[in-house]
Length: 480
Image (cartoon, rainbow, N blue to C red; front, side):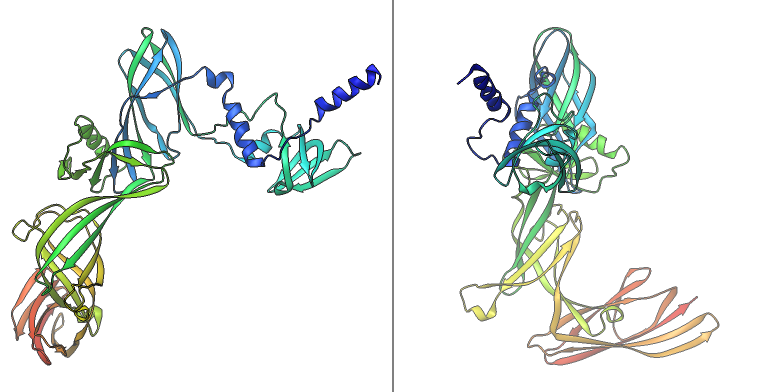
């Protein structure tokens, strides 16, 4: 074989090397991204290292405040430092990096991440090597339209090939450059000036969205329905895009005004104190803060639950409520208790859903439980009365009728109402009748006593015997 042939074979192998195995396109792009990340620009940035567990304060409006201790080795003068893997939903305007002996001159948030579309578009107009239908080919990437690639084949004469990305088995891009500005993970970069060389302890703090918590309660009525056991669990959901390991977590209940200074005041107050070792609520500005007892791992794109409220026995009662103007003939069945120490609770309750369970009377004496309804509660301070709407009563029904409507004067009317309640059950029932009034009003006649709840509402308590009925009548004078 001549020297020229050997040279030609060597060139052929250099231009089109044999592939030892098929590489999935996405794995290839991931490897390419990793290699490109090691460019001289990236290698010049000094990474921030963990220096302890982060403090994570999570608010119930899907935002969190993070204080993350870090360490870094700096040279005297100007340095570039970097932290990869920060949350994708990070609020870059809230980022602060602080430490003794450093002066932060510039900071940036890189969130333009690698994906197949951006990589292909970065090589528009370049020659690429690809394998299609188990055959190697080479051409110039002329255009992209959605999933379609337009490649001008080099082994043909003016042939433009339109091919689906999914049909490509392998692809090689020119090694001379990579997509400018793309990162494998969201990252923060700083340009800082250090007074002298050495190790520095820094504190990174920021706000991030998509990290929040909700409350789920379970209320279990005892047999006889005179008391209930209440447990509340906080469900923490991390969709921020970054994990937090060994975090000291605090949960804040309350509505923050995001546009003003309330958030900053609240965060500053927390930042000066260490997490406590008990789950009891504490005051934070105008809100309530619950510190989780143990350190938590908060993986990205996962939810975890931690206990929040526990009360073994709270005085409670079944109640019925009838609002004929709104509910027609339906009577609501409720569970009612007071959030105070006398009743067995006395702790601020964050807003959340309450599932109510009771003893199944058909389950014998083994205490079989049944789900009897659920409701939501607002933020409930100590001393407030809680009413849990469980469902519509089966045996108790109502009927509301306006008996007369009399115009006494041009701007004065009298209305007489009759409210009839029936109880087909085996036990007596006490029903709270809620009535809504308008304008300036006065009750002129009534068959039972009432309570004035507000300027426009009153309540009557009616006892309805088992297998019987009761009727309430009242006359109201409205002035307009």
